[in-house]
Image 1 (spheres, helix red, strand yellow):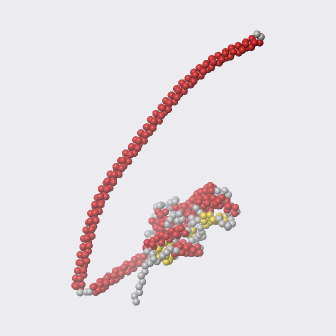
Image 2 (cartoon, helix red, strand yellow; image 1 turned 180 degrees about the vertical axis):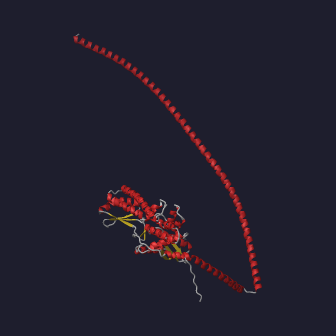
Length: 521
C-alpha cells in the first residue's frame, strides 16, 4: 500500500481518538458543572425558604400587634361611648324629673286658675246683682228726694249748677290769690333775668362754616398720581381717611369733602404730605394717614389743655381734653364752637357772680355745654343728649350735666346754672358778627326737608323748624288714622336718612288733629 494511505489512516485514527477524548472531557466537565449548579440551586432554595419563613413570621407578628392595638383602641372608644351614653342617660333622667315636676306645677296652676275663674264668674254675677240693686236704690232715693223737695228734675239740676258755680268762684278767687303771691315771690328771680340781658357783649374771632378743604397740587400730572392706576390710590386714601376726594378740571386744586372736620383735616394734611413726598401708593398712604392721625390726636389734646387753662378749670378728666380739641375744628353757622364755648364760660361766670352763685360751676358748665358736638358726627342723637351721657361717665356734677342736656330748652332745667348757660349761649350766638350762614344754603336745606315730607300721601303741610333740627308734619285727619301717622313719621325719617346729608339728628313730629265746627243760627 502506498505510504500516504498509512498517513491518512493514522491521521484519521488520531482524529477519532482526539474526538473521543474531547467528548469524554466535555461529558465529565458538564457533569461536574451540573452537579455544582444543582448544589448552588439547593443552597439558594434553602436560603430563600428560610428568609420567606422569617418574613412570614415578622408579618404575622406585626399583624398580631396591629390587631392588639386595634382591639385596645376599639375597647377605649367603646368605653368612652358607653360613658357618654351613661352621661346622656343621666341628663335625660334629670330632664325627665324636671319635666315631671313642671307638669305637676302646671297641673296645680291650671287647677288654681280654674278655681280663680270660677270665683271670678261668681264675683261678676254678684257685682251685676249688686249694681242692679244699687240702681234700684238710687232711683228710689231720687224719687223720694223729688217728693220731699217738691222740685222737678230740671229745677233740681239748675239749683245744683248754681251751687257748683258758687263753689268754683270761691276756688278761683283762692287760686288767683295764690298765683299773685307766687308772682311776688318770683319777682326777685325775674329781676335777675333782666340783668342777664344787660351784660356787655364782647367780640371774638369768626370763622366760616364749610365742609370742604382744598389742597394745592403743583402740576396736573400729580393729579394722575393721586388717582393711581385704575383709581387704586384714591380709593385707598378715601378708605383710610373716611372722606370724599373730588378731582375735577380745576387746575392745581384737589378738594377734600367730609362733614367730620377732624377727619377732613387729617385727610388734608395727609394729602399735602403725600404730594410733597411724591411716593403715592396704598402702603405709603396708610403709613402717612396713621402718622397724621397720631399727630392729630396729640394736637387735639394740646388744644383742649390750652382751652382748659384759658378757662381756669382744674380737675378736667383727660378723655375730655381731645373732645374739647375737636371743638376747635368744628364750626356752627360760621362760629368756632370752641371759641363759642369759651365765650359762654366767661359770660356764665359773670352772670353767676352777679346773681350770687358759684362762678366756677357756671364757668365749667359753660365750657362743656356743647361737648356733644365733638361726637355727633359719629354717634346717633342730638348733641345735648350725647354730651350729657359723655360727661356722666366722668362724674361731672348735676349742674354741668343738666346744662349740657337742657341748654336748648328741650328738657326742663333742674338747676339755676342751666338757665345761666342758656342765657350766655344766646348772648354768644346772637351778638353782632358771631355767626354767619349762607342764606341760600340754609333756605335750601329747609326747603328740601319740607318738600321731602310733602311727598308722602296724606300730608297736608310740613314745616322745618329749629334750624332744620325738627320737621312738623300736619296730616289729613280724615284720610290718616293714628297708626298710619306713626308709619308716616317713621317713613319720613328713613327717607331723610337715605336722601339727605346732615349733622346730628332731625326730629319728625306728625300732628293729626280733628276739628268739628258748627254754627248756631
